Length: 415
Image 1 (cartoon, rainbow, N blue to C red):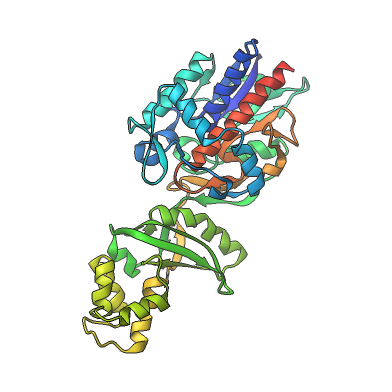
Image 2: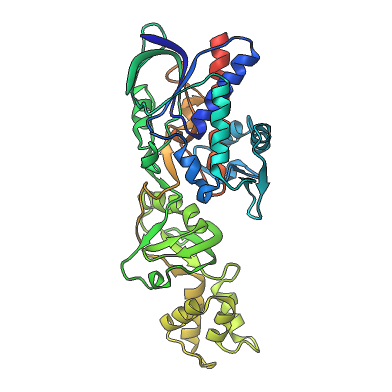
């Protein structure tokens, strides 16, 4: 049975980064170590290649713990601080991948190709002597009497002195992240923050809802949650897409995990949309009455796409008339600023960009990403209970946690 120093289980963003920095640390310390990265996919880096519409938004120009959900903000901040968005930009620049910042704050490769990012990571890993073994899914990991780990799967059984678990969550299962990593973590003594649900996922509305007739319409809008007690819980304002099944776009993806989680804690929570961010029903009603408004429908058509404005007016029972009964005018203001979205389900992990839930950060040492319950095991990436909003934040979590895990694994071997 062959023995390796570091086995990285899962060779996508976090796994490649962990393997690279384990190799760099070993080289810096002057002691070569054997690092093998295993992945069940036939082609490596599927999530990298599809991210950002095939362009891969590597990170965001400004990243804070407030851009994430899941484990506690102070814990997330501590890991992010070990390898920042500036470090990420420097890392890729040194590999020959120039980044450009767009108006949204997202950083993309100047080539506009995710392949540029993946190829740079693969070249660096191979230059450092990392063995990339795929398709070879690791299906079982056990503690070995030697103090290391016994790994079994779609390869010859092997022993590893240290293991870094970077298997991802359950989003985009075709890429290989189908949740099996959670079972590996639990087998080694970890627990999970549940339920494990899709994050950054489109939402499906009731069949035949009027919004589905607006399929293809994109506009800036604000989505917000209102608790059963009427309290505004969380909101996101950004580009919003009406589809044949319901809702998508950045604002919808960002709020999806919060809505889905709320259904377990407060099933009376409602998801609402404000088609005119910045307006309340009171301020919009005042604008309807302002001199020169031309009437409610005329005013809406100046601020919203025509077919949306007409649909809202129809729902409120309003035509082109300037003289609108007070109750209908107020109903239109409410529909415009607080339409209730009757969500019946999400589109599932197949269409999700991330996973909410996973191994809590309280079960790892934040300085090293080493497990508190299974010494020698480290964890990084989406297998942990951390998920970011749209815009490159989940990649930054992969880079930060992978850097910490890989660097520590190599140093631990030296000591």
